[in-house]
Image 1 (tube, rainbow, N blue to C red):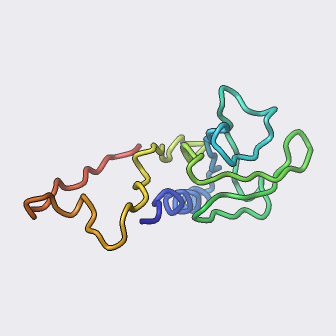
Image 2: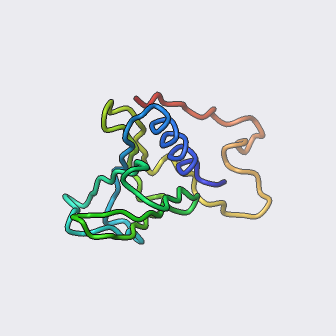
Length: 135
């Protein structure tokens, strides 16, 4: 299955922009493939303003996030694998979503085998997934 994280990021971004709020990303700057200005990294993390007024050429793709922005007046290109995004939230209200490693399903192991979630060895249905409220 495809990760749901990029879909949630796009939806939250659109909702924040439509409500006149400023979307920010909390990013694990030590994640493989992250390209951010290292001088702005604190404790291995960086907060990025991704509002339309702060970035240019924003791409919120399934594989990653790309945009151009200015840091200290210097133009920079930022590249983030989706897995590096730890949260998206509004600067004004603090509303948003936190992500964890549990949010992304593991890659499929075999071709047409049924997934372990669909049934156990007796053929009965496995536990139902748990839903969490994220404030």
